[in-house]
Image 1 (cartoon, rainbow, N blue to C red):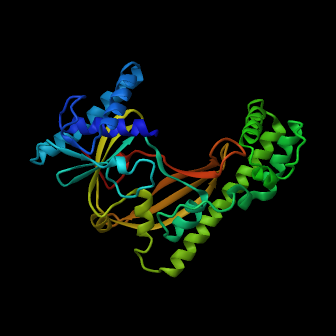
Image 2: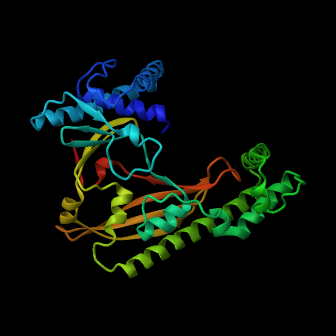
Image 3: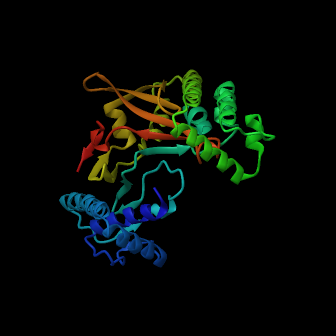
Length: 345
């Protein structure tokens, strides 16, 4: 979500929690004049649109749910600390956008993206238990499907009648003329929209190969980690990172599919008393782009039953085909309110 929208959603919920007017920021710590301007501009913009007005009401309702919960616990919210501005544009595993009394609150507005990182981070570092490291490395498509991407690139050049000095994909990437590469990317997108069968088939073959090799790399790195760390709880830090489980209980709130929600998530100690984290299995997912499905496998210690919760990874160029570094976005495909360790407020 863009920075202005993030600021708006977090401050909107904060105002609702302390039952303040839309223009009264005096009881929210860390809000600057610039932040106020951004909030009010976004408020005005949303108020003019039907869906925007609905989003405002949904966020306010989410804040009201939290307020009622706190009042039920014997607290009347009067002041709140906004800490989310320190996390914007960063990769943060600890949930804390708002803080009131001893409660931490993480705000999500229709946010299904869990992790927005590089393929190297997601497929190589995270299954090794390495967190907070931003790496790019070599081009992931070349690493996982060099022959397939070379063929796809060559076919695109053929159908576009391109004759230049960049006949190989490495040479194309080495070209520093961004406008030239962007124009090529737009023409490739047109080939796809025109349903060029040869192009579509070649691209799908490349996607399937990237998905297959990426899942194998994840599984191999996870196996190395499990071999090196044989404790039954050694995998838990990886699960905690992916699912944002913290050392303290916290509230996650906002909107999902434009509907308000607020849930209380268990801390890591309480979670471990109720559940076991058994494994992660990565498998290729056939789609119109490279995708990998991560199946997180758990056991309920009370019932002794196993259950799975999936995450989906989409791998794509950051700025259109052949433009920008490939990125790996990890998406949830479920609601926070459906998590077994979530208490709906």
